Image (cartoon, rainbow, N blue to C red):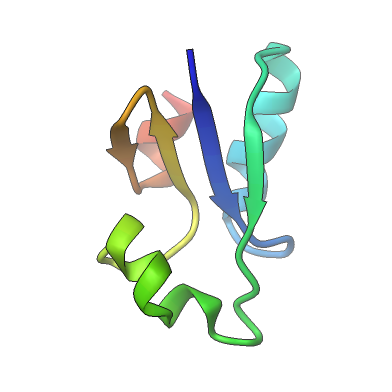
Amino acid sequence: MSIQLFYCPGSCALASHIALEETGLTFNPIFIDLTEKKHQSPEYLHINPKGTVPALIHDGFLITENPAILR
């Protein structure tokens, strides 16, 4: 099982980050610096065309909305 969480501290992605930590699941947190507009980079837009955080990839499936991630 592979889980990647794209997040930025201080954003709403914090809730998803905390939830994943609490589950005890192994995941790869990937910092996206919103102050440097990394969420607008072509590399990140290829991952998440919305250009927002959080974005979670679980076994190749993308979820980009906090309520869906937290569910």
